[in-house]
Length: 281
Image 1 (tube, one colour):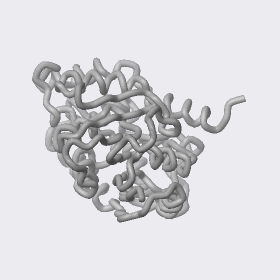
Image 2: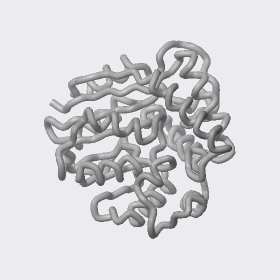
Image 3: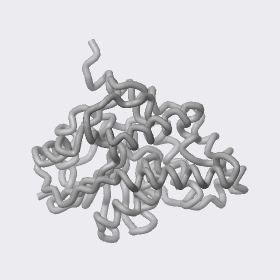
Image 4: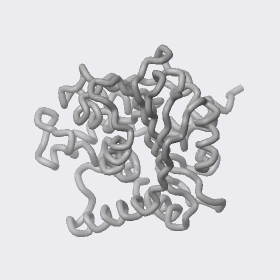
């Protein structure tokens, strides 16, 4: 019999499956007049930072975490490793990333190789609920748009707490429930309400505190999200269509419907991307 964890992981893998992602990214780079030999970190940002706000959201979260140079940082649910590459490059950190989706890990490691970052970044396939790291390993950690795919958030945060060193900062940037109401589906992280494992801010705080973390700050990023989507729309209209690389590279034909539903859910104040900054005590 399949347990809840197995069913949830299967849904996650189905939702994020692409099939030919690395070639799709290479094709987008060709349209940009770039190749894997001369691609830059900024060229990849529209596709490899799969969260609301892309690079801007990453910068905002990292400014609050303020990881020290040469710290060893954990990226939980790293996806293609875009945030990991930004952190490694901007702050001279060593970054380890873990993600359930093997295609994302294989693609992410290829992108690290293109940028000459393979010695600084290690991405591997695995579950965030049972990570292959020793206790007290990391000087800091973050996760971006991950919790919506994990039901047992107390177990998730307890596992992250285990692998962090005392005093380490941990930042979360997830889509969270704001109030009750029927959501429009599909959205980027799930096709239906059964596979969408949203929780509200209070649930996150309680789970984090149960795991042992001290909450330092909570930031609702509702207005930032709406402005981001509006900016993307205006830019696409000005340029006469979608750019060579973007979230549509990942979500393919379902992109328009998923993003339209997500914006509707945010506009109706049913959900909102939210940051929570905590410390291991």
